[in-house]
Length: 241
Image 1 (cartoon, helix red, strand yellow):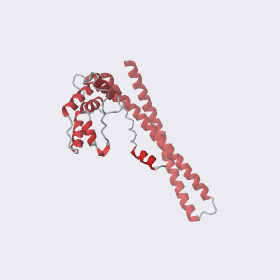
Image 2 (spheres, helix red, strand yellow):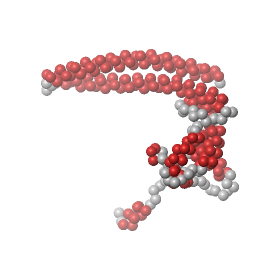
Image 3 (cartoon, helix red, strand yellow):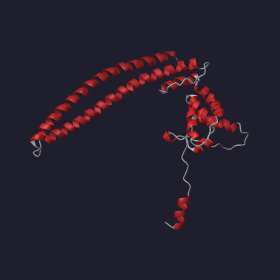
């Protein structure tokens, strides 16, 4: 590689990473552009960092706090979430626009608290954070609780399936170890004292295998009950439609 090529490759800007927007955020961007009367051809989207690092200084400075609030609202997050942004941005000497955040959050909550979204929110397993206004909350909660109940029935079945799969995996591992022990037992190179230990280990593995078999049988019976409860609830929901 020539010196010119090396210099060029070093100075080349790194390609920006792809950013995926939620439908709510995309709708908010369209709203901003529609109201700009042609003054804007695009918007800058600030992305807040996650994890322990918190928000970067650039994110704190460039974020559209109304959009941040709107996004939090559409996700059903509490308005109190602004306190996290305040704490993170204070480290950079930046104060979030609280009024803009609250305005956007109130609009986002209107979207989140639609009755039709209540079922989806509950079915996702998300915890309701009490964000809906009194005029929207009763119908939202009725649908949320229905979705949440379905989520709990489905989760119960999934959890049992996971336990059964785990037991089956452990039993497969035990069978493999017992096969290895059997091969070692008949080997002429195996010492007598080692064979004594292998016998003890085989007995231990046999007991554990039996325990797993009994546990799987109980889980299978429990799964049948949970699956019936799920089916009955699905039938009840279908009858309401």
